[in-house]
Length: 446
View 1 (tube, rainbow, N blue to C red):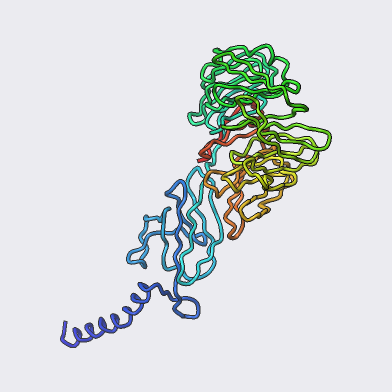
View 2 (cartoon, rainbow, N blue to C red; view 1 turned 90 degrees about the vertical axis):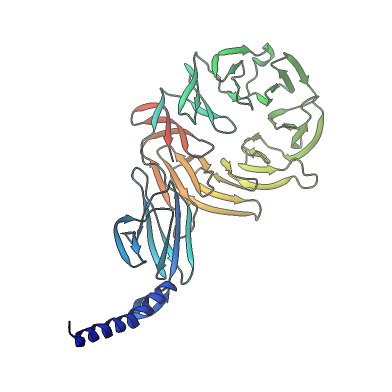
C-alpha cells in the first residue's frame, strides 16, 4: 500500500471517528434519532411477569438482545424480567408469551427520559381442568385458609387437599344435610347431626339429640366449642367434655356468628333489628347495635368487620362492633357476592356488575359489566387481578387501568355451578360439567 493510500485511509478513519462518535455519545446518554431526523430523549420499559422467561414483543416485533445496544444478536431473545432501553417516546403494543399460557397484551406509553413499569403481570395457564371426583356434586365449602375443601351430594362426602390436588378422605353415605361447616382448626367438620374427623370421615361422633331439630348451620367458636340456635335459645356444646349450656334470654333469634372473643346474634323486636354482642362463655349480653327492622344474614366473608346483608332490601351493612360511637362503616346496595383482600378493600358483584370498594377513601369503582349472571367472584392474592365465574365460563380481569382492563377467559362454554379459589391463587376448584362429564374439577391457574 502506497503512502498516499495509507494517508487516505488514515484520514477516512479520523472522519468516521469524528462523525460516528457523537452518535455513540448521544446513544449512551439516552438519545436516539427520531422522526424528522431529530434526536429525542428515549425512555425505558421495565417489565416482569409470573412466571418469568416470557418472550417480549413490542409492536409485534420479538425483542432480541443487542451488541453494544445497537447490533442485534440472533437467537438471543429478551425474556422477563427485562429492562428495555433506548425506546423512542410513543405508544407501544406490548405482548408477553409463554408456551401453554394465555398471552398478555396491552398498549403502554413510553415518555421521554422516563421509565414505564409493568411488573405485576400474571400469565395464567392455558389448559383444561382435570377431574378430582366423578358425579354431580352440590357445592364446595372451603376452610378459612382455602387449603381444604368439602364437597358433597346425596351419596358421598369428600375432603380435598387443594394444594396437593387430591381427595384425602371420603365417606359413602346418603346425607340430605345442607349445613356442612368446618371447625376453625380444620380438623373437624359437621353436618348438624355428627362431627367428623376431616382426615378420616369414617371417624365420627353423634351430636346430642338437642341438635337434631336445628335447621341452621352450627357455629364453631373454636375447636372446643360449638354454638347453635334452637328456637329462641343459644346452645353451647363442648365435644371433648360433652358439656351443654343453654343461653335462653334471647327472643326472635335469626343468625349467629363467632370470632375469637365474641358471639354475634341477629334478632328482632317490634321496632327494629338488633345485633347482640355476647360473651361466649356465659351468654352475657355485652352490647347491642340497632339496625332498621328487616331480615338479615351474616355473609361471614370479612375477617375485619361484621358484614350483614339485608335480604329484603338487598343492602350490605359493614359494621365495626368495637366502635362505640359510629359502628356503621358503610352500606352497599345489592352486593350479593363479596371478596375481601385487606381491611379496607373488597370487590363485589350484584350479579351483572363487578365493583371495587375502597373504604379508606370511600371510592366505589365500576370494573366491568356483563349480560350473563356472575355467580362467584375472587380477588387474586396478587391484588392486581379479579377472577369470576358465570354459568358458562371462568375469566380473569387485570386491574391495571392503562389502555384497558385485560380480560382472559380461562375456560368457556362449560356448565359451572360453583367455584372456589385457593388462598395462594394458584388453583381453582369448580363444580359442574366439562363437556358432558359432571364432577369436581381443579383448574391450575399458575
